[in-house]
Image 1 (cartoon, rainbow, N blue to C red):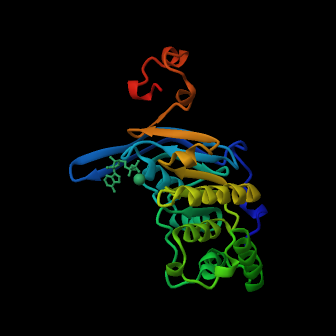
Image 2: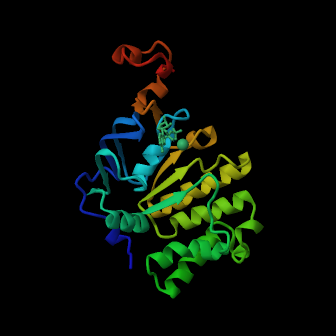
Length: 261
Ligand SMILES: Nc1ncnc2c1ncn2[C@@H]1O[C@H](COP(=O)(O)OP(=O)(O)O)[C@@H](O)[C@H]1O
Ligand SMILES: [Mg+2]
Protein backbone atom coordinates (compact mmCIF):
# COMPACT_ATOMS: atom_id res chain seq x y z
CA UNK A 1 0.00 0.00 0.00
CA UNK A 2 1.04 3.56 -0.61
CA UNK A 3 1.73 6.33 1.78
CA UNK A 4 2.78 9.80 0.75
CA UNK A 5 6.14 9.22 2.48
CA UNK A 6 6.93 6.16 0.43
CA UNK A 7 6.49 8.22 -2.73
CA UNK A 8 9.34 10.59 -2.14
CA UNK A 9 12.78 9.35 -3.04
CA UNK A 10 16.05 10.61 -1.70
CA UNK A 11 16.41 13.32 -4.30
CA UNK A 12 19.39 13.55 -6.59
CA UNK A 13 18.14 17.03 -7.32
CA UNK A 14 15.91 18.13 -4.44
CA UNK A 15 14.71 21.24 -6.28
CA UNK A 16 13.23 19.26 -9.08
CA UNK A 17 10.14 17.10 -9.35
CA UNK A 18 10.70 16.58 -13.03
CA UNK A 19 14.16 16.85 -14.59
CA UNK A 20 14.71 16.26 -18.28
CA UNK A 21 18.24 16.34 -19.68
CA UNK A 22 19.01 16.34 -23.40
CA UNK A 23 15.78 14.54 -24.32
CA UNK A 24 15.59 13.68 -28.00
CA UNK A 25 12.88 11.75 -29.76
CA UNK A 26 12.59 10.70 -33.39
CA UNK A 27 9.82 8.83 -35.13
CA UNK A 28 10.79 6.54 -37.99
CA UNK A 29 8.47 5.99 -40.92
CA UNK A 30 9.98 3.90 -43.70
CA UNK A 31 13.19 5.68 -44.73
CA UNK A 32 12.08 8.91 -43.13
CA UNK A 33 12.99 10.08 -39.66
CA UNK A 34 11.05 12.88 -37.96
CA UNK A 35 12.82 14.59 -35.09
CA UNK A 36 9.94 15.47 -32.73
CA UNK A 37 12.03 16.64 -29.74
CA UNK A 38 15.52 18.14 -29.88
CA UNK A 39 17.76 18.35 -26.82
CA UNK A 40 15.07 19.27 -24.30
CA UNK A 41 16.42 20.37 -20.91
CA UNK A 42 13.78 21.12 -18.31
CA UNK A 43 13.45 21.35 -14.54
CA UNK A 44 10.07 21.69 -12.88
CA UNK A 45 9.93 22.14 -9.09
CA UNK A 46 7.46 20.27 -6.92
CA UNK A 47 3.96 21.72 -6.74
CA UNK A 48 4.22 23.92 -9.83
CA UNK A 49 1.30 24.37 -12.22
CA UNK A 50 2.95 24.41 -15.64
CA UNK A 51 1.47 25.01 -19.08
CA UNK A 52 3.05 23.43 -22.13
CA UNK A 53 2.11 25.44 -25.19
CA UNK A 54 3.12 25.60 -28.83
CA UNK A 55 1.57 25.08 -32.24
CA UNK A 56 0.26 21.79 -33.49
CA UNK A 57 3.16 19.46 -34.35
CA UNK A 58 5.60 21.23 -32.02
CA UNK A 59 6.06 18.10 -29.86
CA UNK A 60 3.68 18.63 -26.90
CA UNK A 61 2.09 15.17 -26.99
CA UNK A 62 5.46 13.54 -27.54
CA UNK A 63 6.81 15.28 -24.44
CA UNK A 64 3.71 14.41 -22.37
CA UNK A 65 4.00 10.76 -23.42
CA UNK A 66 7.60 10.65 -22.24
CA UNK A 67 6.84 12.42 -18.93
CA UNK A 68 3.82 10.14 -18.41
CA UNK A 69 6.00 7.05 -19.01
CA UNK A 70 3.83 6.06 -21.96
CA UNK A 71 6.85 6.14 -24.28
CA UNK A 72 10.29 4.88 -23.30
CA UNK A 73 11.89 5.09 -26.75
CA UNK A 74 13.90 8.29 -26.48
CA UNK A 75 17.42 9.53 -25.84
CA UNK A 76 18.48 11.53 -22.80
CA UNK A 77 17.63 11.32 -19.15
CA UNK A 78 14.35 11.69 -17.25
CA UNK A 79 14.30 11.89 -13.46
CA UNK A 80 11.04 11.98 -11.55
CA UNK A 81 11.43 13.04 -7.91
CA UNK A 82 15.12 12.21 -8.16
CA UNK A 83 14.56 8.72 -9.55
CA UNK A 84 15.99 7.98 -12.98
CA UNK A 85 13.31 6.54 -15.24
CA UNK A 86 14.59 3.68 -17.37
CA UNK A 87 12.85 1.70 -20.07
CA UNK A 88 12.08 -1.09 -17.62
CA UNK A 89 8.38 -1.83 -18.23
CA UNK A 90 7.72 -3.07 -14.69
CA UNK A 91 9.22 0.06 -13.14
CA UNK A 92 7.27 2.30 -15.53
CA UNK A 93 3.97 0.58 -14.75
CA UNK A 94 4.60 0.82 -11.02
CA UNK A 95 5.63 4.50 -11.13
CA UNK A 96 2.68 5.34 -13.40
CA UNK A 97 0.26 3.66 -11.03
CA UNK A 98 1.68 5.06 -7.79
CA UNK A 99 3.00 8.49 -8.70
CA UNK A 100 1.23 9.77 -11.81
CA UNK A 101 -2.27 10.94 -12.67
CA UNK A 102 -3.75 11.72 -16.09
CA UNK A 103 -6.45 14.11 -17.32
CA UNK A 104 -7.50 14.11 -20.96
CA UNK A 105 -9.42 16.42 -23.29
CA UNK A 106 -12.24 13.89 -23.76
CA UNK A 107 -12.38 12.92 -20.06
CA UNK A 108 -11.80 9.19 -20.78
CA UNK A 109 -13.92 7.86 -17.93
CA UNK A 110 -14.77 4.16 -18.00
CA UNK A 111 -18.33 4.23 -19.40
CA UNK A 112 -19.64 1.18 -17.52
CA UNK A 113 -18.45 2.43 -14.12
CA UNK A 114 -20.23 5.01 -11.95
CA UNK A 115 -18.57 8.27 -10.94
CA UNK A 116 -17.72 6.65 -7.59
CA UNK A 117 -16.24 3.56 -9.24
CA UNK A 118 -14.20 5.61 -11.72
CA UNK A 119 -12.60 7.54 -8.85
CA UNK A 120 -12.09 4.37 -6.82
CA UNK A 121 -10.32 2.54 -9.63
CA UNK A 122 -6.73 3.84 -9.06
CA UNK A 123 -7.06 2.98 -5.36
CA UNK A 124 -7.99 -0.60 -6.22
CA UNK A 125 -4.93 -0.81 -8.50
CA UNK A 126 -2.83 0.47 -5.61
CA UNK A 127 -4.35 -2.10 -3.22
CA UNK A 128 -5.95 0.27 -0.73
CA UNK A 129 -8.31 -1.44 1.72
CA UNK A 130 -12.04 -1.05 1.09
CA UNK A 131 -12.34 1.15 4.20
CA UNK A 132 -9.58 3.50 3.02
CA UNK A 133 -11.07 3.57 -0.47
CA UNK A 134 -14.46 4.55 0.88
CA UNK A 135 -13.01 7.38 2.96
CA UNK A 136 -10.82 8.78 0.18
CA UNK A 137 -13.42 8.52 -2.59
CA UNK A 138 -16.21 10.03 -0.49
CA UNK A 139 -13.96 12.87 0.62
CA UNK A 140 -12.84 13.83 -2.88
CA UNK A 141 -16.36 13.48 -4.37
CA UNK A 142 -17.53 15.89 -1.69
CA UNK A 143 -14.77 18.32 -2.66
CA UNK A 144 -15.65 18.25 -6.34
CA UNK A 145 -19.32 18.75 -5.45
CA UNK A 146 -20.55 15.49 -7.00
CA UNK A 147 -21.43 13.36 -3.98
CA UNK A 148 -25.07 13.47 -5.07
CA UNK A 149 -24.12 12.15 -8.52
CA UNK A 150 -21.78 9.40 -7.35
CA UNK A 151 -23.96 6.57 -8.65
CA UNK A 152 -24.33 8.04 -12.12
CA UNK A 153 -22.46 6.65 -15.09
CA UNK A 154 -20.57 9.12 -17.34
CA UNK A 155 -23.38 9.28 -19.92
CA UNK A 156 -25.61 10.85 -17.24
CA UNK A 157 -23.07 13.55 -16.38
CA UNK A 158 -22.38 16.82 -18.22
CA UNK A 159 -18.95 17.44 -19.79
CA UNK A 160 -17.89 19.62 -16.87
CA UNK A 161 -19.07 17.03 -14.34
CA UNK A 162 -17.20 14.28 -16.22
CA UNK A 163 -14.02 16.34 -16.19
CA UNK A 164 -14.40 16.95 -12.45
CA UNK A 165 -14.70 13.19 -11.93
CA UNK A 166 -11.61 12.69 -14.11
CA UNK A 167 -9.69 15.21 -11.99
CA UNK A 168 -10.80 13.42 -8.81
CA UNK A 169 -9.65 10.14 -10.34
CA UNK A 170 -6.28 11.66 -11.24
CA UNK A 171 -5.73 13.11 -7.76
CA UNK A 172 -7.35 10.62 -5.36
CA UNK A 173 -4.08 8.74 -4.93
CA UNK A 174 -2.09 11.96 -4.22
CA UNK A 175 0.20 11.62 -7.25
CA UNK A 176 3.47 13.51 -7.53
CA UNK A 177 2.75 14.56 -11.09
CA UNK A 178 -0.43 15.03 -13.11
CA UNK A 179 -0.15 15.03 -16.88
CA UNK A 180 -3.05 16.81 -18.58
CA UNK A 181 -3.68 17.07 -22.31
CA UNK A 182 -5.97 19.99 -23.25
CA UNK A 183 -8.20 19.48 -20.18
CA UNK A 184 -10.38 22.54 -20.80
CA UNK A 185 -10.58 22.45 -24.60
CA UNK A 186 -14.12 21.02 -24.63
CA UNK A 187 -15.56 23.21 -21.88
CA UNK A 188 -17.38 26.55 -21.83
CA UNK A 189 -15.70 29.38 -19.93
CA UNK A 190 -17.62 29.03 -16.67
CA UNK A 191 -17.03 25.29 -16.53
CA UNK A 192 -13.40 25.66 -17.62
CA UNK A 193 -12.81 28.08 -14.76
CA UNK A 194 -14.41 25.65 -12.29
CA UNK A 195 -12.20 22.86 -13.59
CA UNK A 196 -9.05 25.03 -13.31
CA UNK A 197 -10.05 26.07 -9.77
CA UNK A 198 -10.48 22.44 -8.85
CA UNK A 199 -7.14 21.38 -10.35
CA UNK A 200 -5.38 24.16 -8.46
CA UNK A 201 -7.14 23.58 -5.13
CA UNK A 202 -6.68 19.82 -5.14
CA UNK A 203 -3.15 20.19 -6.51
CA UNK A 204 -2.18 22.50 -3.65
CA UNK A 205 -3.68 20.13 -1.08
CA UNK A 206 -1.69 17.23 -2.45
CA UNK A 207 1.40 19.32 -3.40
CA UNK A 208 1.07 17.90 -6.88
CA UNK A 209 3.01 19.12 -9.90
CA UNK A 210 0.96 19.67 -13.06
CA UNK A 211 2.21 19.56 -16.64
CA UNK A 212 -0.64 20.72 -18.87
CA UNK A 213 -0.54 20.80 -22.66
CA UNK A 214 -2.92 23.60 -23.56
CA UNK A 215 -3.86 26.13 -26.20
CA UNK A 216 -6.34 27.66 -23.79
CA UNK A 217 -5.44 31.13 -22.55
CA UNK A 218 -7.93 30.69 -19.67
CA UNK A 219 -5.66 27.90 -18.46
CA UNK A 220 -2.18 29.23 -19.32
CA UNK A 221 -2.91 32.63 -17.75
CA UNK A 222 -3.33 30.86 -14.40
CA UNK A 223 -0.19 28.75 -14.58
CA UNK A 224 3.02 29.41 -12.62
CA UNK A 225 5.07 28.92 -15.74
CA UNK A 226 4.47 28.60 -19.48
CA UNK A 227 6.85 26.38 -21.39
CA UNK A 228 6.70 26.87 -25.11
CA UNK A 229 7.69 24.33 -27.71
CA UNK A 230 8.57 25.30 -31.24
CA UNK A 231 9.54 22.63 -33.78
CA UNK A 232 10.61 20.26 -31.01
CA UNK A 233 12.76 22.81 -29.15
CA UNK A 234 12.06 24.92 -26.09
CA UNK A 235 11.59 28.64 -26.54
CA UNK A 236 13.04 30.64 -23.69
CA UNK A 237 10.38 31.60 -21.10
CA UNK A 238 12.12 35.00 -20.89
CA UNK A 239 10.74 35.80 -24.30
CA UNK A 240 7.15 35.83 -23.01
CA UNK A 241 7.80 38.85 -20.84
CA UNK A 242 9.96 40.75 -23.23
CA UNK A 243 8.58 43.90 -24.84
CA UNK A 244 9.38 44.38 -28.52
CA UNK A 245 12.89 45.53 -29.23
CA UNK A 246 13.98 44.61 -25.72
CA UNK A 247 17.37 43.38 -24.61
CA UNK A 248 16.23 39.82 -25.05
CA UNK A 249 16.70 40.18 -28.77
CA UNK A 250 20.24 41.35 -28.18
CA UNK A 251 20.95 38.64 -25.64
CA UNK A 252 19.46 36.01 -27.92
CA UNK A 253 20.32 37.32 -31.38
CA UNK A 254 19.63 33.94 -32.99
CA UNK A 255 16.08 33.60 -31.65
CA UNK A 256 13.71 33.29 -34.57
CA UNK A 257 11.42 36.20 -35.39
CA UNK A 258 8.34 34.24 -34.36
CA UNK A 259 9.71 33.91 -30.85
CA UNK A 260 10.19 37.63 -30.34
CA UNK A 261 7.01 38.84 -28.73
N1 LIG B 1 3.43 8.20 -34.06
C1 LIG B 1 4.06 9.08 -34.84
N2 LIG B 1 4.67 8.68 -35.96
C2 LIG B 1 5.33 9.56 -36.76
N3 LIG B 1 5.42 10.88 -36.51
C3 LIG B 1 4.81 11.33 -35.40
C4 LIG B 1 4.09 10.47 -34.52
N4 LIG B 1 3.59 11.21 -33.49
C5 LIG B 1 3.98 12.49 -33.73
N5 LIG B 1 4.70 12.56 -34.87
C6 LIG B 1 5.31 13.77 -35.43
O1 LIG B 1 6.11 14.37 -34.42
C7 LIG B 1 5.96 15.79 -34.40
C8 LIG B 1 5.44 16.23 -33.05
O2 LIG B 1 4.12 15.74 -32.89
P1 LIG B 1 3.26 15.89 -31.55
O3 LIG B 1 4.13 15.52 -30.40
O4 LIG B 1 2.01 15.11 -31.74
O5 LIG B 1 2.99 17.45 -31.52
P2 LIG B 1 1.80 18.29 -30.83
O6 LIG B 1 1.23 17.47 -29.73
O7 LIG B 1 2.47 19.56 -30.36
O8 LIG B 1 0.79 18.57 -31.91
C9 LIG B 1 5.05 16.12 -35.57
O9 LIG B 1 5.85 16.41 -36.71
C10 LIG B 1 4.27 14.84 -35.78
O10 LIG B 1 3.85 14.72 -37.11
MG1 LIG C 1 -0.84 16.83 -29.42
